[in-house]
Image 1 (cartoon, rainbow, N blue to C red):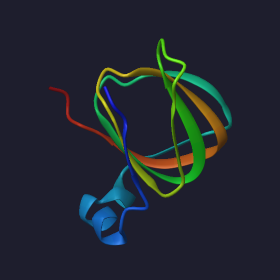
Image 2: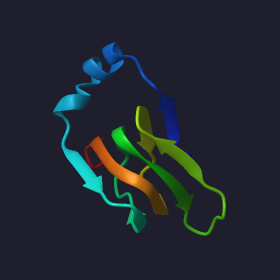
Image 3: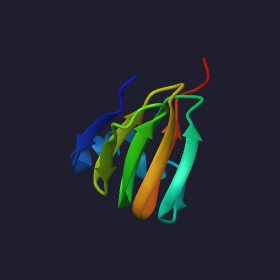
Length: 94
């Protein structure tokens, strides 16, 4: 169950995906327990976060300018170090 990160995708790719028309979500620095019921693709406009999958001490870190795919079913803790502002979309339920 891997989080996929694409650092600094091209503006053409972001436009083709329609990222700027996706809903926005933001949060303050802190720790958040999250469960992803569906696969999420998000683009971070601002911020930095470490994501710790449940039961693991290892983490994945991403931030502003990253296009990220989070797998369906992931339980994790987000450790937000810089205010997060992101566009996101969920895959339709299967």
